[in-house]
Image 1 (cartoon, one colour):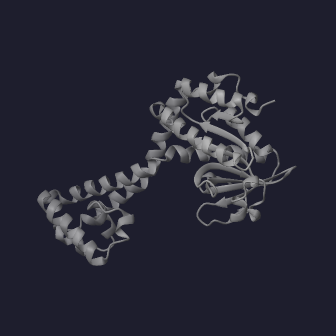
Image 2: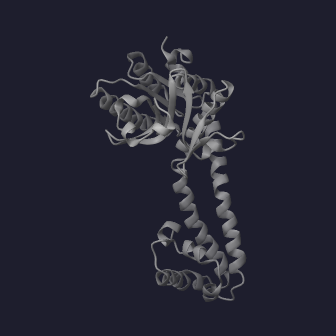
Image 3: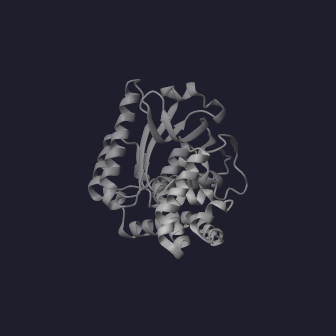
Amino acid sequence: MKPYKDHLKSSKNLETTYEAIRAGFIDLALEKNRRSTPFVAQARALKAAASRARDPNDLLKIEGIQQGLLAAAGISDKAANHLQADDKTEVIKSLIKNFLEPAGANFVEELVFRFLLTRGDTLGGSMRNIGGFMAQKKITRSILAHLNLAGKSCRWLHAETKIWADLPTDDTDIETQVRGLSWITPEGARTLMYNLTVPYFGNNVDLSLFACAPDGMTKDVQKDPSAYLALGELKGGIDPAGADEHWKTAATALNRIRQAFAKHNLRPHIFFVGAAIEARMANEIWEFLKKGILTNAANLTDDDQIASVVRWLCKL
């Protein structure tokens, strides 16, 4: 039986419910608040330090707040790394002359407001791909749960250190740091990589499953079309207004994957998981499944569907 039939009976099953959309927006709001907490704490610390200044020019004499002053001037941390010390001083002096001095006795409040504006832009930038981040977390947690229940060991790739290690006994929040997972099946070792640029067609793929162990994940293996068992697109955005656009992007990427492997007379499993799936989009995905263009698909907001896709993926 085709794997998608384990959890899908019709295109209707793929559609995102109103309740799931509402819950998704709430999750996004909570995540945004969580991510904003450090910026609010920084603003409070900046206000406490700046309140020691008698006038705006005294701010230049206070140690440890230069990054805050630069942020208030509209300079991001990344941009600040490209400025010389003299340039930074000039930027801060311009902030003082043009904005803080005109604020008079309220210069500290003006400073904090402008600091939060820049930090708000930083937060907005980090939130643009929050749907993808949360989707990856959910898939990862589901895979770990499946492997744990099956009594299978697992290794994971740390996103920053790029080091593979055995999964710790306490794997709390590990899904926020993972770049890859690996496990053993009766057919051999399997390695799942997140956000990998597939060399021979140059595009990023959200989920790539290889028939090898982590130690065998060389650049040569990544260039070998026959090493790929499955490739999937993951769209975590929950806003229905962007659902069609997300699907168009995903469908284009999936078609590109299929064509690239067809040139090598290969047909790895191709799958799609999305959070916001409208009726027309669900119909298209269902047709792709029936025609064999897609091997599997699921709605990210349905835990049973995700569990089913993960079981299938871990058995390949």
